[in-house]
Length: 264
Image (cartoon, rainbow, N blue to C red; front, top):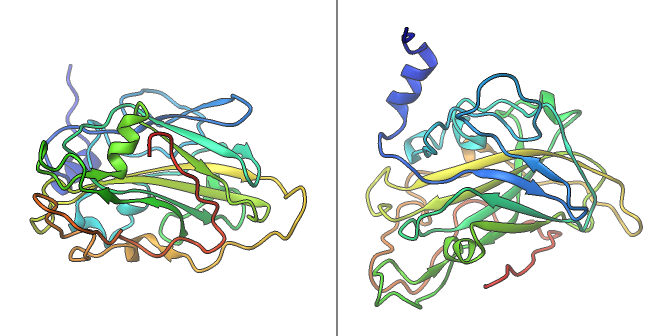
């Protein structure tokens, strides 16, 4: 017997677009080779994960009209993961996506937010996000073949088998953090409410640094203040001759350790 949809399901179906696709993080790998499972919205039953759970069945996206809500933090109706990935300053984490279509060009962005205690009890509404990595528009290569503004961070991710590497800042202080990784697809962003955000979150436990000065993560922005519907990097036409692009969100943290992606 088929059960009627819950109130939450009805609400989400109203808030989000009906078109399908297009990606989510399936696993996170640490330098030791340990692999941590991402959130699978099609799964059933309880799961003790480091990844945040969300109502993103069908790999749906967050629309710009929802950027002023807590949904943009870690996706629709997100709740914290129960566990943390043990890591250390300077560690490189590999984030594996299940897929990413070639037409969905846009920036790849990564943030951290400090938790006052365990991130398993974090409130998404109050987490202050600090950007540690971004790759947006790179060049006009291929624009004559696919009239979608050349090469973007999303193309780099695709060239690396839908994976992305992020370095934990080398000066980051010991503590618990939520890592927020996101692709913003811009293929219909010339329309108001046309951009598509795919935020994913996972908990980290960062050990103390082996040496040097540890710095507190400061200057963060709460989720519903990260982006606006009409920001230059959100409401933008990438079809045709793109000559530049302003990534959405705040500037990258001055103490972040940015690394070049393979195939970039």
